Image 1 (tube, rainbow, N blue to C red):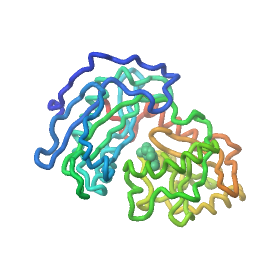
Image 2 (image 1 turned 60 degrees about the vertical axis):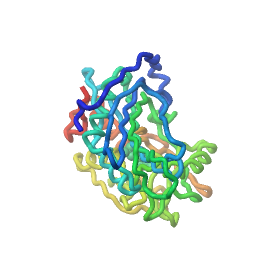
Image 3 (image 1 turned 120 degrees about the vertical axis):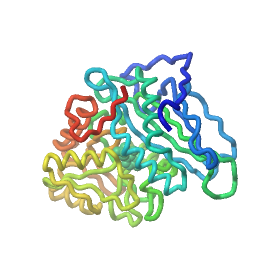
Length: 356
Ligand SMILES: Cc1ncc(COP(=O)(O)O)c(C=O)c1O
């Protein structure tokens, strides 16, 4: 399906755009959306950019009963000089495709995914903020729409994309955040959905995150099913700096492999900073803090970019990392990554995909 097949219907009622200082995360939506449907009989059909509007769903739609829902999180940036580009959309397409296979869903082909998003971002490109730390967040979503109550994979799907201009993910901005080590609930178990961006994983996570927030922690650090190894933070992958080595949990099926995580590994390798993927015991982090080997901890994610962690706490203990300051590795990664995304630094890995 080529992009010339995407029909455009412009909104006649454009919204007022918010001030970039009041953006926060995910509060505002742009004027348009992209959508395309799939059925076993027709394949993918009627790709269209339309005014942002409510969806029409049959109450029997499989997403509402058996949770066939997957989403992605990406960003588009206004680059130095005014042109616009997205960061690594192929990574997100790949992850959605792998998630769709696990949930027995039909993922859109790569061309349709990328050309649909480009057509949408292009029409709403005045919504891309240009201030440092701001971007246009892109939310591609895939849901089962077939009205049928038997428990089996749906034969009809809707892929849609909405956009939201965003600022900083955390109210702390780029200052270190506080993370709660979750010892009661778990996010994922071996053999489950943890490696996918299934909506179900976020439903699972809400209770722990809500309890952590009540105690003024930004997010939780998930542990494995035996509460022994660290996995990831609510919406970020995690990295630890032990002496001069950077360590991140290996992807064993329970962790969502992030595009930011992958980019951070690539950047560190290009700087000849040793970076290792392996299992990391919670006890090793506490011992590393005691001995002074633990220099930094930070999270990585599309929304949060690079987020230093200044405090880690559980029911029985609490540690302050790097005097609650942003460490040199997190700071360098933040500058480099946002520099590439804003066109201030050379894009040597070809991560930016031009929209116009
Ligand atoms: C659970 C979880 N882990 C990790 C990440 C980081 O992934 P990415 O860097 O692709 O945004 C996210 C955010 O999307 C997430 O929700």
